Length: 502
Ligand code: MN
Image (spheres, rainbow, N blue to C red):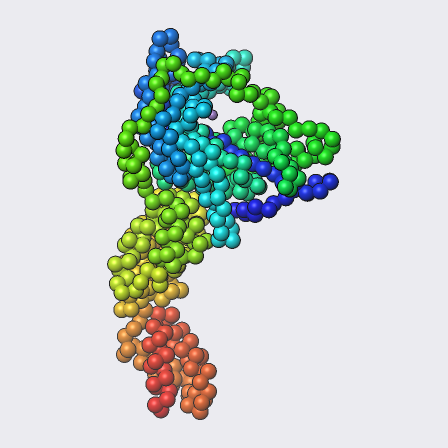
């Protein structure tokens, strides 16, 4: 992730700055819809999860789902945002074939969550804050299916009425890479909170991308909005394409029109969809079927107290308690499942390490996860949640390096790890089966040393004559004779005693 805030586009007439704001629609994790009891599971047969409310039958009344409200409040708290104790549901009127009511219930002037922020982790170890303007609750629409019949369109209302959180950023982003980092961080926070699964390929998280360009330091230019972009790669591509298009348009004497556009993944371009509606076109008004939403006393405090440890705090803790670099800490907290694995591993490892403080081995263990385990997982296309080596098993492997009496030589760790990955056996089992325990038995080492010294009388004489450098060579020979298993400190000790004695 490259997040250089100073990324400029070079045009024919000079440099341009791109200004990006994102409106992310995040589907709330909930068994039931925002205003009905219909189910929300992904991939069900069309129109099997539709209540009379979702189908907008006359006389049906919406009933607010308390769980969805709590999910929105928890998300607001996770975004360090102001929670509004009173918010209002409005009708946003427009016609769409998959919107049977002719309006979407949304929140307009009084959203449930106000201003907040997201911290981006930059490549150089620094951070950058992006403002959140608001988060509001609204219903999703249904889906028009154009590919089921040669000359008819079908409508699937399973998604109609599903709760969405629309999370609106400030126009604080200055490059495609920053926008990508923003979506990744937002998705991580939602997943930690368990308020949205973040599966962009299933449409549970999609971004409307607002892009404008300007000369550095000048006022904001006219923006376009590219709708419903459903992957981070596409968000980045849409921004770069749109910035280039707008720069060429302006430099050619044209003007950017405020409009809604569509991203086409096939060509990597955006195209015009419709001229942007103004808010007054929607004739927003408070939904007369719904009272203002008033949060009960104590709800916010209770939900705040129950929040899990989120990525930023976890990162700080890893750096402080385990001595990790900002880079390692950022990599480990980026996905909840990875952080959980590392946490479980450290929880197991710390008591096994006894007197050794976690700052001494935190980085080493982190590298074992990030470099070695990730390498095996990637090569076999396995998710960390399906890792054949559990966090506890990995901790036990690492503990073998720490324990002086069994000490597994560092260079053999990878070999044992690979065998664990294949066989599912424990580190202890493999170390025993393959005879990989480090030899710390003084008698065994003495015998090896004696043999190597006897075989190299000339070099031994040189050491005795003061050529100290050759001790290293002897250590190497003894290590080789032991198949790499001898304890090097002990070898060194025995060698020196022996060579200098005789
Ligand atoms: Mn919306």
